[in-house]
Amino acid sequence: MTAETLKPTAILHRTPWRPPTAVSAEGIYVTLEDGRTIVDAVGGAAVACIGNGNPEVKKALKEQVDTVSYVYNMQLSNQPAEELAQLLINSSNGAFDLVGFVSGGSEAMEAVLKLARQYFYETKQLQRTNFIARQLSFHGNTLGTLSLAYHPARRAPYVDLLNSTNFHHVSPAYAKRFQKSDETEEQYVERLRQELEDKFLELGPDTVIGFVAETVVGATSGVVAPPKGYLKAMKSVCDKYGALFILDEVMSGMGRVGTLHAWEKYGDGASPDLQAVAKGLGGGYASIGAVLMSKRVASGIRDSAGFMKHGHTYQAHPLACAASLAVQKVVASENLLENSRKQGEYLSSLLHSRFKASPLAPYIFEIRGSGAWWAVEFEFDEPASGAPKVTFSNGGFGSLVQAKCMDNGLIIMGFHGGGSVDGTKGDHLMLSPAYNVTKEEVEKIVDLLVVSAEQVFKEVTST
Ligand SMILES: Cc1ncc(COP(=O)(O)O)c(C=O)c1O
Image (cartoon, rainbow, N blue to C red; front, top):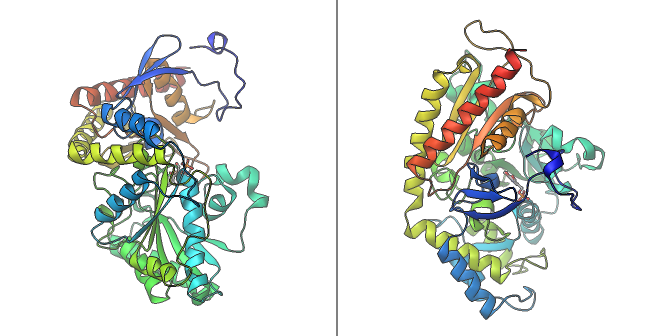
């Protein structure tokens, strides 16, 4: 679809190009206004975890509109919100005790920051004013979450407005890039643990509210899981100094890595004091996010104020909660996490075999992921086996492949300069299909992806 064939728009879009308009969608297939039907291999942005048009969710939404479409959360609660909160607690194996609803990922992380502070406010530790997060992280697009995170490109226009007094950063946990060649995984984790402890000591350990991390890093470096023992080691520092261990599972949570919570797979038993979830919670049927509170935080707040001193007009919206509840019931009753693990392994094996046989092979830095969430990272500056260095203009390889995929009928996320290497360099492609993706759909996705990546590579290297 060229710019000329697209209708004019009154929307200030988020992309330098004009995105085509979707007119209908079913499962992972999206039909555009020009009549083309394309495959969504990334669930929008790791959101549509059961695809579009699920009959159970449509039924739940219709019934909710007919029952209670809206009540304001400072006046009335509603049934789907109460049921959803209980379901989230019951499915957490005792990790969580209370839930607060919001309308998305950034709101969830803002609420996490404010609840963490509220906890220390209520428990009379007012000197705790510092958060420690990590470089190459993303926690949202509000000023608070941009201050917390460290995604240089997204911070750039606003950097002078961001708060560097209360938000501090330590190194990312990205073994394949940053573990030293003479270091074991254990030594790498110990180096990162020591760095966090040193940051606590530098700030004054009793001034730290908490350490915040994405359990698996998403939008910056692309599906980077922590090294073994890392989350447990970071939590031990928080515990030692009475601070909170906080996980952002906006992208990685609610089943994306094949377990309901990503820390269940990667935490070595370390559950968080506070956690944010969003994307897979509503599966795209509604704007919803949630903050999950451990017993420690829940008790601290329940035993004092007893309520959340933060909120928004649309939080715990009945329609959003009804949709989300239905999505979670579909994921559980259809055993979709098992399917996502199985199809994810198949996806990974196809990515490995197809790229191994491709002219892009020397440029593959890593193929990584789990569940229904995978990334392919490329290295064009220092390729393997003496292959020549390649330079891409026009937005970099990741962005070019994303555009080529769209032309070829596939939606993926292609990142360039988002943070794979240092926050400015690096290319990776991300796939996060619906948990109910089929074997045939996986084959189609990999085929279109590899063909598109090879086309971009050929176009650049043949000129
Ligand atoms: C880890 C993480 N946190 C927060 C957010 C922000 O979520 P939202 O875009 O719903 O505001 C995102 C979005 O991609 C994310 O990946």
